Amino acid sequence: MKIRNVEVLVACPGRNFVTTRITTDDGVVGLGDATLNGRELAVASYVKDHLAPLLEGVEAENIERIWQYLYRGAYWRRGPVTMAAIASIDMALWDIKAKSLGVPLYQLLGGRTRRHLLTYTHATGRDIPELFDAVRRRQEQGFKAIRLQVGIPGLADIYGVGTAAGHTAGFAKPLVEVWDTPAYMRFVPSMFEAARNEFGAEVPMLHDVHHRLSPIEAARLAKDLEPYRLFWLEDVTPAENQEALRLVRSASTTPLAIGEVFNTLWDAQEILQKQYIDYLRMSVTHGGGVTAMRKALDFAATFHIRSGMHGPEDVSPVGMAAAIHLGVSIHNFGIQEYGGYRESTMELFNPAFELKDGYLTPGERPGLGVDYDDALAERHPYSASYLPVNELRDGTVHDW
Ligand code: EZ4
Ligand code: CO
Image (cartoon, rainbow, N blue to C red; front, side, top):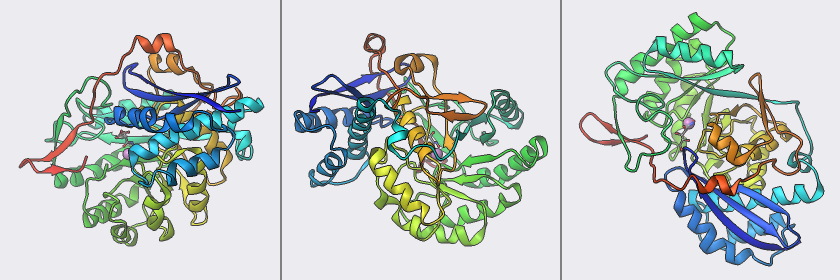
């Protein structure tokens, strides 16, 4: 079974998605997610201009070899553009192999280790009452675990809340958000105190700091939030300097999750080995595909670290399907983020996975269980869009 062609499909059914489609000489079609929010066309070019020509005529069955060929063979390794491109090829090849054998992908990964996957979704509000309404709506939809993000008094827009909330299509230039660390650190613990009083001790609650704190600030926030027993505190500090997490770890027992911007196991090596985190946030889409993520999560397992794969709306349903198949097969699954998709996105990809009562199942369709509707995609052309950037009150660029 040889690769006949590799296509790159770009569409914007409300937000941009990049999808790699591989067709074999006997007509089996596989899909892979290559979406890199705000840098979509760079990955599209990487696949179209640099990978597709190398893959035509190659045996589609040899997934591990192809992964090594694309990773080692390029000389230039790692980085989000390269790894999202490789991930999309890898996903498409796993999709093809499972379809050609007539089984859902998780069967090739060792079968199921659990019935279904616990998910968490997002609740946001400009203030606490609005946030609590959002939490109630999410609970009514069946979600058990919820990420809470709230506006900070005095700040117009902050991560996850405000005009850029959802940061989807139509931001042809990045919006600017204004950030104030002391204001944030004063307010967030009071929000979680109120949330525990309102919703009780049992609801798993999460929070995303989005890389905004220095190590000593992160340590204090983790400590201040300790009484509210978060499921996890995410991206407390930018993780380029991983040794910085030692300070946060020694200050509190609030569980930590990091890794949504990581692309390879090497990016996570130190925080895994030193057990600085509890959940690894790398996604299949940005972590080099099913082949690489399986290895990364097996490695994490030896340090008692569980999966918490990134699952916002900008990981396409193809990437989400890959995460779900992997999640039901690994032993050290933790939780799956599920941002949810608008209807136009679900129509475009027609995923077999199902969300019921806050739990995801992969479905039983062969392969990843996703399609691609070319006619529908044509009605939603690419539209340049960027995430916001963040500035301090004096105009200093800050982490977003
Ligand atoms: O801002 O996916 O945990 N989720 C997140 C996301 C990220 C976007 C970046 O493309 O932090 O909402
Ligand atoms: Co995040």
